[in-house]
Length: 365
Image 1 (cartoon, rainbow, N blue to C red):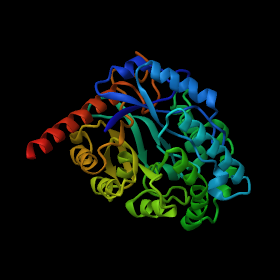
Image 2: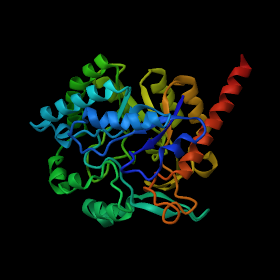
Image 3: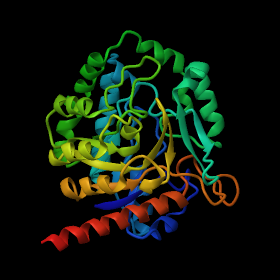
Image 4: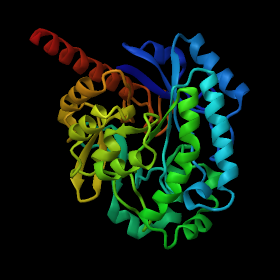
């Protein structure tokens, strides 16, 4: 396992890389550039980012949020141009040592929460929160406005203002689209990019729908084992993998997360892992919790054991985190869900579980 940390780049992230380096067991980043969907990631930008990360003593082998343009998802004529841009990005990233590209194929909304700073009564911290009942009251446009207000001025991946400014137009493009139609467009994309990935030694890792069910009547196809099985079969290749996010899939209690990890891990189809915990509050109603198993409803031991048993060499990062120790609005302004302190605690906890599992397994031999 390689423990990594999400970082937005020195111009967009208030967390210095030297702090990330000080987290025990941290090997590198799952980094990103603030690039709009459809725009090529240019070599000079990638080199500058990679050089900065390497100078801090960290690896840069996984990149996140190389977003897929909506015209690709909806199958519009301009998709070929955007796919060519994506292929250029793949080649450019591979030149600088990137081995895994995390992306998603979610229509319109890359992820959705109804509150970015809900206070947790048990300890006074705050976390990302979702209640489907609120969606009926607000609707898509109101959700976008509220999320922008709650983001504390940060641009959140998947919620770029220039993209969401066209929200009404984009939503209309999906009218009448079925999951099978979306999968057909997805296959068109994979058939174009996966051969390039095979050539340059890169894996595409699809992030699941977040939350793990359809919203606003949009077709969503990556929120359970069955959906992911269909995705990996769209283009059968070791380069067509999943980014298995335990919190996204785990938002639906019907998903058995350790079993899903074992299923795709044994197939060698897990390109990367996002590991976090959730607390169920009702039907399609949850909040994000500290990584510790007892604070949420996911069994972190069984999750880490499944990784250890089936995909021990994968990249893992502690995903999301509460805002604690005045990080939200006092000592240091932080991006919702991506503060330093709780994610650092999460990394230490996951590394501790890994060490315990490793000792247990070696003692059996």
